[in-house]
Length: 199
Image 1 (cartoon, rainbow, N blue to C red):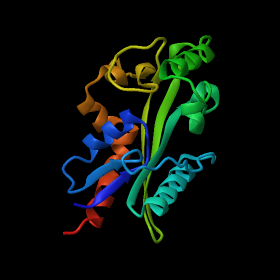
Image 2 (cartoon, rainbow, N blue to C red):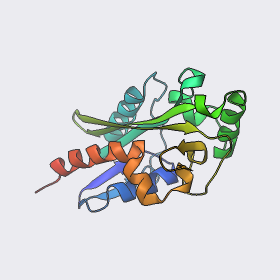
Image 3 (cartoon, rainbow, N blue to C red):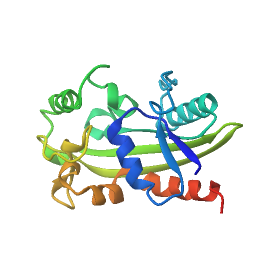
């Protein structure tokens, strides 16, 4: 069975991709399983540049077809922050709850109706030798006044979906995979991978 390196150490993200790519005749392996500890450059200004950098770096290092993504949260009231710095917004060693609290503190004077935000995800699929394809997805919502829900990770507990009256951390995994930024990008990535697999 062909192998696909999922270039992340984030266990929540790996689990999501396991669900999103289920049914493809491909074995997902992580950086840890491939015994890769080197870190790709991901200090670019866009999600696309970071995703491409990681996919090409790890494909070259491993010799494997590689999927990498870069994703994050953009909050209109903060001028698009945290953006590409979403995972490092509250400092390099901050926990998910640290990041959520840091974000809420920055927004404490902003009323709910002015807390428009979106999650963005760009997926890059690279193979040794120069092959590269990209896919992207977005999910629109608001930043809640306080965290709610236990399903999910990162900023999910404060990303409120008005149409459902819930945060992403309160909806089912199945619905999240359908409507999330990563879910929408993964539908496109899945089609790219299906074309690459032996028929």
